[in-house]
Image (cartoon, rainbow, N blue to C red; front, side, top):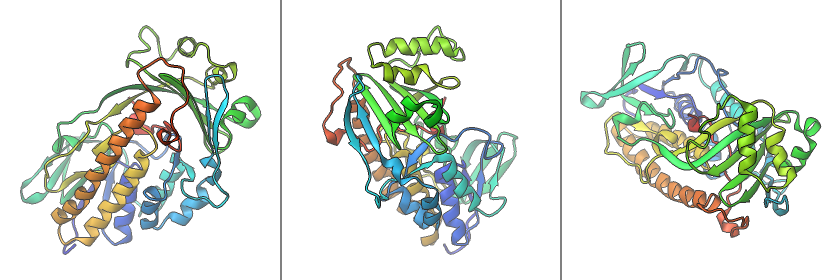
Length: 389
């Protein structure tokens, strides 16, 4: 870059943070604006499998790959598939030296990225209201406190309900027809040995028709469960979602006839249930170039959570930073970045749509078996913060 641009990243999620880290490694200053009050203001979601061809590429570009490996759980690549009778249909275990998709808690990965940034890079409690294109290719960030700042490049890394996206696109997320209900277990090996046996060291999924039960082991004996089903967004009509026992009864009715060991996933949860309807952006989602503004991650290509979202956000962030570093102008950098990112997002969104239709068909068939090619390494994993309401 011939002159040092003023760069703002909106959103301190994984994609925005890795973008900031790569920029700073190459001496390019950047400011990250985050509406949360601090790094621990809310749960950051469950465990992620970081793929060697996407997320790991980004972490290498950030100079954090070895630190990531030290925190990751390669044994978390284990995956078990059951039918609704709790019969084990498939069991995949990674080889001892397999680092193709090691697991890491989302919160640990985010903390690693945050700690790698220069002090003061993230401005907490800074909620962005909108972004306005200005003459000469710059953009104005308008904050909720009615202050404004101008930048040469504004990067929307602010997830499903992005405040930056409207500057580029009229697209809005829509309900995908599938809902996840999240539940939790702590100290699972001692307090819930049956759950521990079902989930193993990684992920388990039990599937029948429009319903599935998914569990993922996190670090420190914590397990997250996702009760996933196709149906209306208002499946809980007439219920108070804060009434745990009433929600439990409704969910148990949905899974009537499943094996008792699987129903214990619903019966023995600790704390309440968290409703997480899935939202997606239109496919394809593209926009006409607006100078000085772009998107990455879920802000650009929100799709069903079938194992690629976080990895694509990381790769987007690293590649965008590298484009800024490697081109003489912001506009040329965005040409290079968007030309690759949008095509990649379209391919992955089509695959995600197909997987969701296969994993969650619009049928009540009890058939739990699909061709091997239809199953990703970790079906319907943690949706992450971007998929919350």
